[in-house]
Length: 233
Image 1 (cartoon, helix red, strand yellow):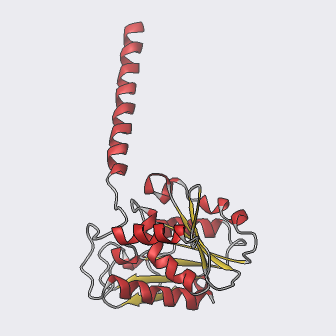
Image 2: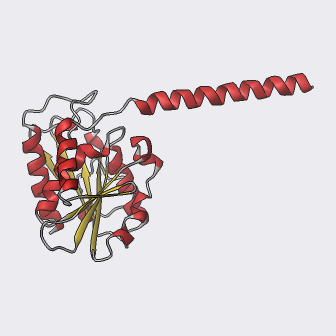
Image 3: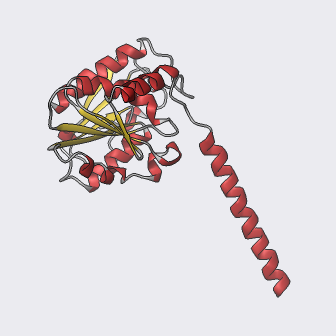
């Protein structure tokens, strides 16, 4: 009996060890922010145009404003990759809070927004958004906390959960090879970016399964920033 128990424990321990090993191999292969995104963030940190607090990168608005966007990165994408896009929003009156997720997976911390609100007590109008898997988790958070947020912004993602169509803006590229566009409801407020793809919302290079974009990453991000600003303001 003791031998059988010992053997069973060894099997369970072996399986657990294998699971942990596979998990760490999976999460260690992620999309890293490109050099330009890292340099831009580091430069802004030196100029006090951005602040890192624990797992949050706070980008204060360059213009006095009471609106802010909490942003969840895409799955297995380094958070810094979205700094160039969000800094465009900050330049035009929207404070942004970029959340670093555990192992770069928002699904492991979908309630991360809970830690943000008290960080910026002067903000009156809170929005949440994200890219791809991050968008799905941001959508989940809003559906569970409708009273805390004014709206939802999805990049290369679709509404997940119970969120009124009038409060959600869906932006996606027509050359997106990752997003399942069939899951976007006709009633949703949506903006298809002609020639845009999935990866170019961030600065992390090409993404597996995606299509080549017909417009530059800079143009895609510029158009995205304009649409988000209009939606929020």
